[in-house]
Length: 222
Image 1 (cartoon, rainbow, N blue to C red):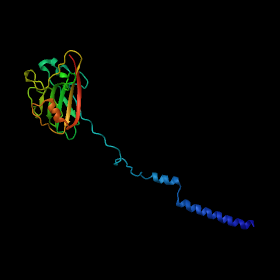
Image 2 (tube, rainbow, N blue to C red):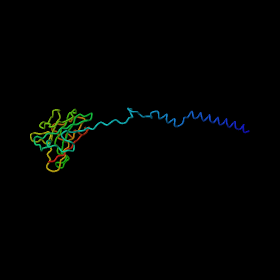
Image 3 (cartoon, rainbow, N blue to C red):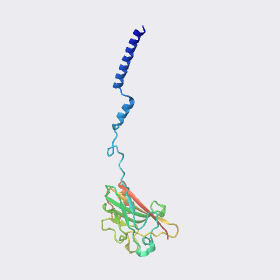
Image 4 (cartoon, helix red, strand yellow):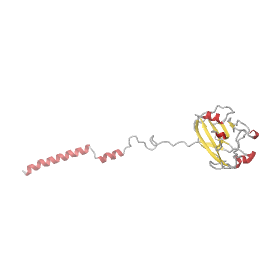
């Protein structure tokens, strides 16, 4: 009896082993599946140089600089009224303008005083319709003519002795430093304003057309 009972059990065990082997061949182990997936790029992924490689670098900012002064440093005497008639305008250079720049406007003003307690401070120099190809204003721009060689226009809002209508050298009263802002604006158009335009006229025409702005501030006291 033992011999007869053992044969069916052995056959049944062999049958179970065969079935298990077939199932294993049709369904590989989870570890094998993961390895297979790891060998292929992930869905939506990009290799080096692909579109998913990250955002492009931002263009460098519009910037202004000068060999005559540094942002935050005191103005040299030669650019102030202390130099008397020998005073000249400092050089200004700029870089990285926006692609659609059509003109530039420079406004130089004393940030401290508020005449008649108004919004305006003291204007020292304004140049508008600077050519879009320009990258600088050299030192010692002539101040006796309103129109400059590139067709731009200048004023200081208060013509001085000798008919100076250009750069008006800073001349603060004795006491604490005044801070002189040199502001350059890149615009998407030329300004259609007359040669007699005031700062208010130019600012109104600029509104809605400013692409970028760069500035330097130089303190000075006597």
